[in-house]
Image (cartoon, rainbow over all chains, first blue to last red):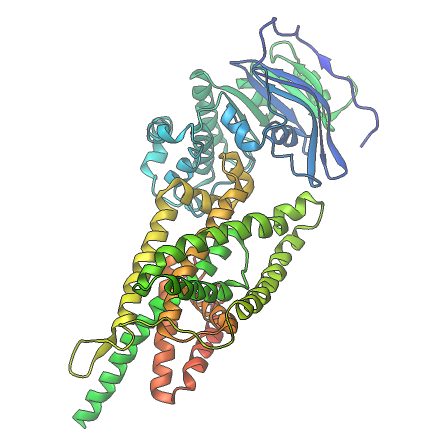
Length: 260
Length: 305
């Protein structure tokens, strides 16, 4: 990777003084010796829908994994930098503690527990002691949000369509009552009609007060739902702003790393 | 002629019956191994030796208190659970795939090294038992060994085997219910499927594996007491039972409790019928031929999806 990183361009004025929900300062991440993220700093405010866009290998997924502690794997992967949720340091915690604190991830490729039923997958999401007493209530709420899952609650998830599986993955993550949900490659591999459906659900989840970060390759989709956008290139955030203030040409240039 | 037919029928009925009973016993011997592999992708080569440890443990308990051998389960099960938890936490967790990754080693090392570690464990256990006890065969005396339940004029079943079969079914149901309906059980299945995502659910795969390993050895505890009650045993008998357990797991498929029972029953029936028709020495051979056939035709096991 290049030694010097592209400088970040911030198109919008920094958000008004409010304390961010999640604050990332100087975050870097490595897979073994390979550095995948370079000094990323980013604030996410309560109520945001932040879209992170960028090409394959730009570091989007690694950023989400770093936030949720999945990059703390000794020699195999590690991070450096600060991540705070409402002032509380997350970067020293393990994944379970981070999820308990209120940040969760809907992983790329859904990664459901393939041999389990819909309901068992959702209940697995209610494993934390804080959530267990609420499990049945959360389950009912998830079935209200995704009525299709209620019909199929006993079906083994590996027999379901991609869209249905994505719904299970989202519902499973929501079981823990997160304040911030990170969606990794939300629309990847899904038919356009299904993606519309999934994005409607995300809008509903957001309307219920959950802050959302969406990693997405489909730029138009992301811009349609987000109130903030950042573009990643080669492991760094190269452009940040709001869909209203950034032109499509600007975003495209940042996405491909071409001259403006 | 009619009498011949009658006796053939009786032979087969007896074979099916005692084979089924034997199958329950085999299933209990194998659950631990199936659970270990199904959950942690870990082949525990010391599984058979842990069964023998449990049998010796029962002998030791009976040395302290002169009670019915079934009461020893109250001591053997918790002790074996603790041992299982401990060896996973302090020993096997250090050589797992995740541990290898943490140290910057290839994951394949994490797959191979538990094999070596449990192989070594098997040797240590055998030698340890020899040092603690002696090479003389031991047995757990009990009143049921020679009792039988008569089901017909020429049809009967060993009371002990019948009791074992009932215990086996109860145990399999209990383990399956635990795995299906409790938070801990779901965590065990989730961590088996995808440890990274399990962590995202707030589960700690290392702790979950320790619980699974504890349960695995607790079931081995029950199996060990059964072994001790039904035959004599010596310090180095473990590998024989490991082979039986492998056979059952191959037949029934991994990670399924129903598979363990059905695999056990099929192996039991095959062994008993081979013994009936081709003499006692054919008993083991018959079982192994069946296992070879299944490996050749359906290597994923008869019941795995």
